[in-house]
Image 1 (cartoon, helix red, strand yellow):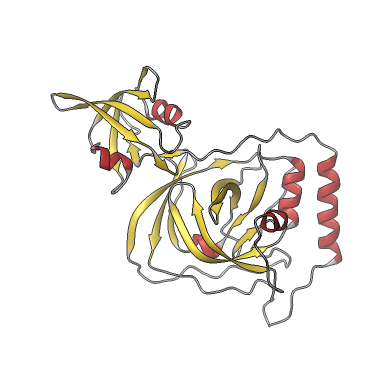
Image 2: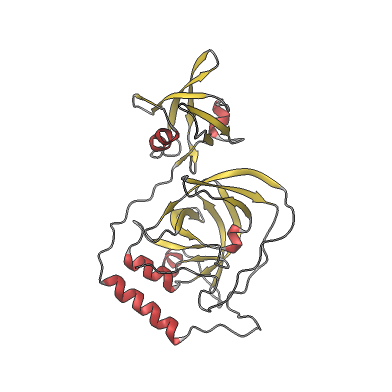
Length: 292
């Protein structure tokens, strides 16, 4: 069963998100943000909220702001105001992007209730990353790759009143909306859910691999990343990687490297065998926090 997620309206059909700013912005170094697809093909990313998590979120350009589940917020001691909003001190998106002092809507949209009831992901979906997060970044997405490129912009999106329709009328959930939410819960209860997996933060290296060619070569190294600090450079040919306490494994493709490094936790080291011109080097990289 496919449950559409059009949270630009959340409760009101036809509401449109604000257009992107038509100005030129100063940009910074990009973040490599790992993601995966749910069974419904929604894009899932992970983020820590106020240092806790990581939690799984749907990335939705139609949602006006960040939405966070009520019960999880309550467990964390996050208190919403009369408009169901709260200020999150720190949102850390896996891969290194950070937003501080962010307004969030503490709510359980029916789409998320239904998706969690049906178990379309192997973990609970805690909310939605919407416009007030995404508008801060230039986002490059290629669905054939396992990571997006997020580049921070010198831009802070304006506050959005998601409780008001156009014309200033207050937003009230309709009877049909409430019926849809109840139906999602009932339908979900009829089907077995996937078993939830334990979420672990991946180690961050700051390496971009060259996808072409018959050998594994580094295309780029993120400035200030663990890979850059250890001495890896663009153009280096990687032939082998040894995880901490394990024997080295041959590397031939970017998929080999991504698969091998996916289970490396922050703080663990990987020793790469590097061919740089006529030199063969052993370079150990201690993983930081985030994605590859």
